Amino acid sequence: MSKEIWVYAENNQGEVAGVAAELLAKAQELADQMGGYRVAAVITGNENKAAKDLGALGAEKVYSLQHAELADYRCDVYAQSISSLVKEYQPDYFFFGATAIGSELAPTVAGLLKTGLAAHCVDLRFNGERLNCMVPAFGGKVVSEIYIPHARPVMASVRPGILDAGHAKAREAEVIAVDTSYLDGVVSGEEFLGFEENELAANNIETAEVIVSAGRGAASDLAWESINQIADKLGASIAYTRSFMDTGRVPDETSMIGTSGKSVRPNLLINAGISGASQYVCGIGKSKIVISIDKNPRAAVFGYSDYGVVADVDKILPALSDKL
Ligand SMILES: Cc1cc2nc3c(=O)[nH]c(=O)nc-3n(C[C@H](O)[C@H](O)[C@H](O)COP(=O)(O)OP(=O)(O)OC[C@H]3O[C@@H](n4cnc5c(N)ncnc54)[C@H](O)[C@@H]3O)c2cc1C
Image 1 (tube, protein in one colour):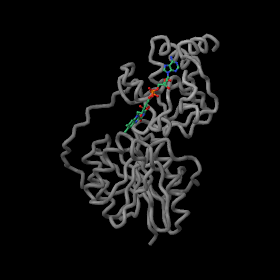
Image 2 (image 1 turned 180 degrees about the horizontal axis):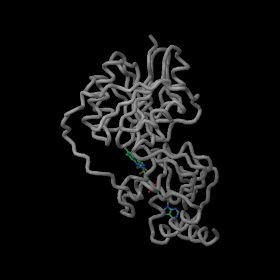
Image 3 (image 1 turned 90 degrees about the horizontal axis):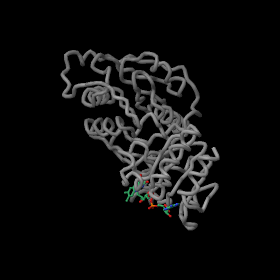
């Protein structure tokens, strides 16, 4: 019997999250490298189409968990259902996206299964038979290798936007409709109230092609207003550093880049008033072209940039906005 590498295909009303494609591509790469493994996606919810689409993303098998109780995400019923499935089929590896949902669901499933989970990984690599889960540590200054020697499945959550999607070979996936009748009459401890669109989430920096990113040096009224104008004119998303967020200009971490924020991969990234701390630059490595503006010619950010502009953002940003 072939062994399996599982990926949790997080989806919102049947729309599969981008991180699921990234994980499936990685799972296929690992399966090819090791031989003898099949890549399977696990999908929860009530959407048949998404289950079929997962083959196009590289899944050879899709375990589809559908039930009225699974129509909307609730951690307790999702975790119970997924852990029962794992007990039945016993995959060796199980990967989740380190999204808001994945960061809650993966450890809950791991807890129920009493197995190990490496959380917020940036890569997964086999070294011989051993899967190393690469996790930034000490605020992103080092990348540690975590491996789980005995417990199975080895579980990992991987940050969205880090792995490359798109290179997986499309497959004709075998869809297995899992019997979920055990959920009939189940009483969840959580009540689903509804979805609310987060205004900041619409400015999705993980998929943005152009990003203007603000640092503490660009927190003046003039710089911030110019950043908004430039973003408007370029059709760009706005991101920021933790220190910028701490100035109170933005309410939360939704569009923050870095170790404890998000990883981005735009075609163009403009950094304004950002020093280039390791905890920030670890989130921009996949950007194609990086332009940084800072008044300090020795700012570390220039070492991570294709073009550097040594200038005062209060002067250059309004001028750039006018020019655009
Ligand atoms: C565990 C841990 C996790 C962290 N996670 C994150 C994270 O996920 N994301 C993150 O961003 N940070 C994170 N940090 C914080 C990080 O270490 C830095 O403090 C932060 O990234 C610095 O943000 P900044 O570059 O905006 O500010 P600063 O480092 O203060 O840099 C401001 C820059 O603006 C320039 N400047 C000032 N005025 C002007 C002007 N008028 N014109 C042009 N340039 C100007 C300065 O020369 C300077 O280079 C983390 C820290 C820790 C300890």
